[in-house]
Length: 114
Length: 110
Image 1: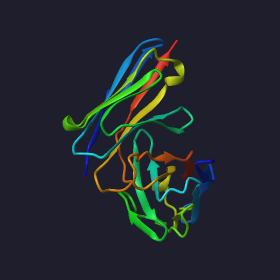
Image 2: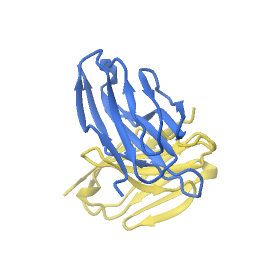
Image 3: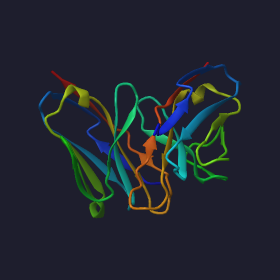
């Protein structure tokens, strides 16, 4: 299993540009999430999904869109990038139900918005 | 929302020393995880421990859910233990909505 994979690893954008951060998992997990990590801080939840076709907002959703058409993929879209979105983005997944709610994180995408 | 506080914020140890990291949370949780973020930024799962005690090698963790705290013990520390340790929790019925603490930055020196 590759686990949770993210692409790209690093991206530089200009203000106003759009892009999609990709996230995929091969563990057949129902739950997937996106977090951002700013310097010196813990991670904050952007959006999450409890299954294909179902998404909801987290703590800091403004400026980001998500969709979930398959169990495996959960892309994060920035429609018009702003310098405040400079951050490291982590995708996570976990299985639904059962006694173990461990979340598994991808390696992250570093985004710089100029 | 739920508050998660970690202490100490920074910790410097000599190799071989032991340490205890603490995580306090403000509400009842059904999920508590400890992570190690290494110097390359990778988040590594250490423990899923909403209650009770677990051990994995030199690391162990204890969560006392009724008193709303968790402890991470590192024994015989090594330089590879350096990085930031995060505690993250979620409330019952909140799917995968983890709330993270601000972390404890650990530096282990020779």
